[in-house]
Image (cartoon, rainbow, N blue to C red; front, top):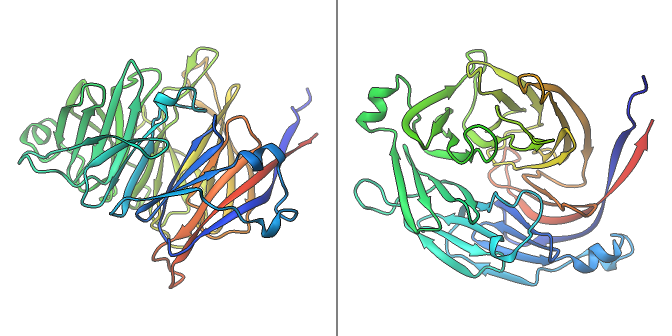
Length: 389
């Protein structure tokens, strides 16, 4: 039986913009319908319109010096800790009222904006002393059916209902209730959050990671229960990213798998939460001492999940995961598809347009082992697909 044809991708830079004096890349948000991109660096938002580039796919070499400019920037007043698009928009923006994102800046409350940067609402997440809490991580889900903002603080998680404008819960991991019910509790600064949005436990089960190197599972229907993910054979560093592998194929859900990323680590880790005491797989991600958060772009193709992510050595990594949906929903196959060296420095932020052969990256690094900061650069890449037998 013949193996299916393998499609290899090549990448060509077609435009770029150096963001002068910026050295802390935070995130990228796409608006596919309008072919626009929002980038977050330090304490500013930068907006780019890619419609002309997408329509013509003008070559970087043919275009005058290959530079593009942002058409708008917004100064927020404080360094951005976290930015999170509405996670309900899996592939592309379908309606303008869903094109929302939440962000929080140091010493400021959480704010929700529409894509154009117009402030929709301010969210005051208060601790047990009725003081506005310092928030370090966000998760944002908004639709007509459900609307949740999770905010990670120090030893706590805030649960806010966006539609009603009310705080639903304040989960204090130092409370007597948590400590009595759990031999081990989450602790420290909650650095990342991921809410499950499909299958078993959707919109109720979420994962939290901390700078204290711990990962826990929680359930909004049972606030004091906690399950720790740990592996005694690994010395995990502070947790910087968590992603549920949400999605479905042929009406069958991926239910049990989670990806974690860590400071100064050469790997991403895949967990099967049914076996919380052992990692399932390791995915390579080169590192030379970075403390950055690195995002992962997910693309679903039939029964496969394709991951695209950068690393601190300027590589574009493309990974394919295949699931067995019919038998226990185990992760069936993991293999590296490609590693492409881009003409770029550390690449913490990558996004891929849903229906265009286009990739955008935001590179840069703050306080690296290279002894000096790497400035932020926004780049647009054309994706070429070559089919190999």
